[in-house]
Image (tube, rainbow, N blue to C red; front, side, top):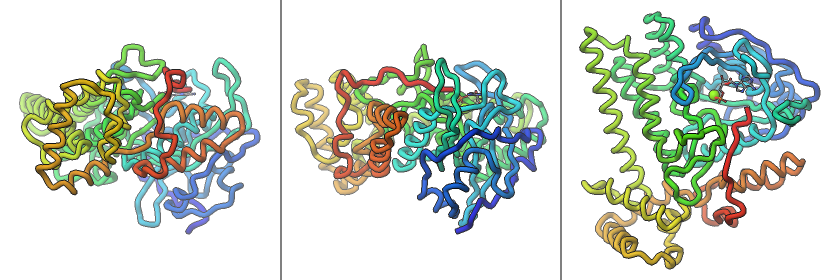
Length: 473
Ligand code: AMP
Ligand code: MG
């Protein structure tokens, strides 16, 4: 264990035009809201609470930090925009005991050269939300940025009302986004763009044999992450290209939510008026975002303009095919089918249709199949459902049954951070009582355990249903 971070700054050193040095703005009277002790241990750091608070508030830079805001642009709801870290400051890359490298970033640490009209600040509710949901995603075995701590600033932040200010310390494999590539591609310096592609590939362990291979690996990684979201009913809510990390980690938890009752087009985000980022749209949006990224790096493909265009087109077609295949495999895992047969995509879409028709709970339906709670289906009077279940049992019986069961256990969580519980935990926390928040956190750290889930598995009553989530920027 070390007493502080071990910083390096490979990104800032190699791409000075992509960062701007900036210092966190000190805050009045910081205090710890929550510290992630297990994560601190993984990072190999042991510090006193007052040291953590000093670092997590931005009031003191840890030794070796070189604070910067990162430049990037991105497509927001389909429209290109110049962005950059408006309220986030990267302190450096911490080199872990196992030599892994993670960005340490303060979110809400004050204005930066990219703040535009924003105040550079964040509020306690949304930061506690990012903390609990990112930790839940990690426990669900989904690649994600982590949350090291939330520090209250002791200052008010104006959002239609005075709200308590807070800063989240985020730990990420990197903060290189699709929007980072968009920004560099716009500058037109192909050598620098190639350098970024190579750097990203090395940093994130892509097979970097050629740009073509890197593109394929990136497609795989992005699609795998989104399929993981689909697997657990997670709705990111703001799949803008500036929120899509090349590492494949789920990045930027704003108005995200979870499917309760199966409604494929469900949207919670208050600002997503047209349902662009609904549950069901996520794979096609991922493809759209990958298309933006491939366009950005297309200048690096070899050959004449015609050859490049053809290659680019083929990459996009391949990505679409891979997406279909991955969706079917992911769903087959959920129903425990070891082999994918030719008509399975149709059968699995039929299941989604049946679940929607009967207003079935997404998580509990798959959990019931997994742990044999068939009583949950007794009230469903529908021939098509009966036939589907009959076929499901037939498939189970005619394969390696134990392997099928294992697939289900590993892919179907018993308990997800249901929207109404998360809201309740945060509401209590804002009123000074963190007990429910801590209880939820411990349940969400064991999402595949039936014994731990308890009442937190129960879907919301009509009164409890959360209709909208807010990004809180
Ligand atoms: P997001 O929707 O959280 O990904 O944010 C989109 C952009 O708005 C990013 O460039 C953020 O840095 C910026 N932003 C969000 N909130 C603030 C804020 N309070 N002050 C300054 N910039 C912000
Ligand atoms: Mg963002």
